[in-house]
Length: 95
Image (cartoon, rainbow, N blue to C red; front, side):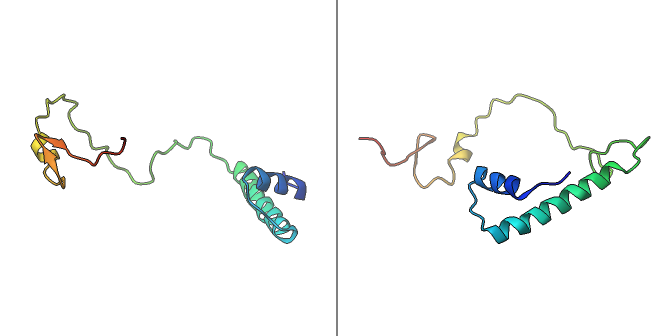
């Protein structure tokens, strides 16, 4: 699979990227190299290879799925520049 200059220009247009004729030719070569590499990957025999979710064996850390009531309003607004009765105070933005 390979792309031509018209396809490169169309993709650039859709991405709203301005490209010169020289840049389009350069991109055509780069895109075709990428597509060629992807075609090479299809030739790799992966029969019997287990799919991986990570290259490092690790166990996902989990926490108990427990609903808490919170009651941390004072801690939440502790760093707020201005707070009132456990609420953030912000400047008025709509008259």
